[in-house]
Amino acid sequence: GGASELWTTSFTDDWEGWQLVEIPFADFVYRADYQPVGGIDQILGLNEMWGYAFTMPPGAPGSFALDAVELYGKADPALTASVVTNAAVHPVKNGGSADITLSVATTGSVPTEEPITVTYATKGGTAVAGKDYTPVTGSHTFPAGTASGATHKVTVRTAKASKPSEARTIPLELTVTGAKAPAEHPQVVIDAHGLPYQNAKLPV
Image 1 (cartoon, rainbow, N blue to C red):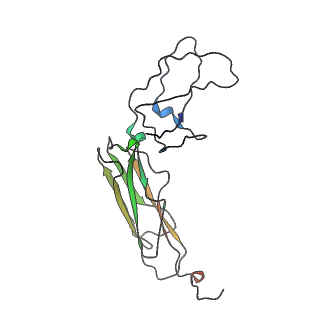
Image 2: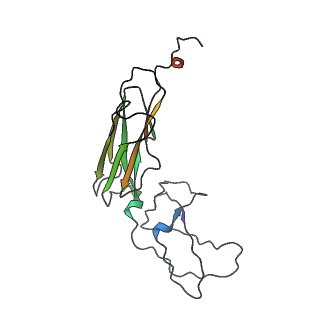
Image 3: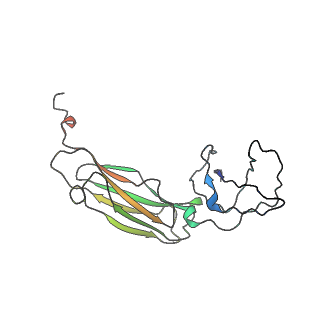
């Protein structure tokens, strides 16, 4: 209640007389130029609507008749649920561990309708697997009926290094099935340590 967002699509009127126009959910895109104040999750999970606008293209005189606008069918479950992380960047001290929390979010905070599987693996970055950190791979499935907000924790452990080093990154690559994936992969950043500029006792 009290939350709304705008989605848009278009079609070309190149026929004569009456025509049935069917527009699937997948054709709608999140409107980027304007959004009302409200709870915005950028997920098209319609099961009802309370308003719409029909915009004719400019500079094209003519007329257009509308009859019986109808919402029907069911949105793809992958469009009504998403997987989010607690942060995009997880800084840790040399030798520390980072906990990355994977959460399920659904439109209207309803339980998930289908299973959601998240496969994860540490991959890429400037840190060296097996030397700077312990590689992590695995997957977790949130079963159908999981409450919105349910979480799963992935821990990335770094190795204690005795030599000075600049900051190093450890991306956690996520592959999501049955839901919308995060906009960006989370990453762990091992803080720079042992460098001269970090020692306040040294002269400039």
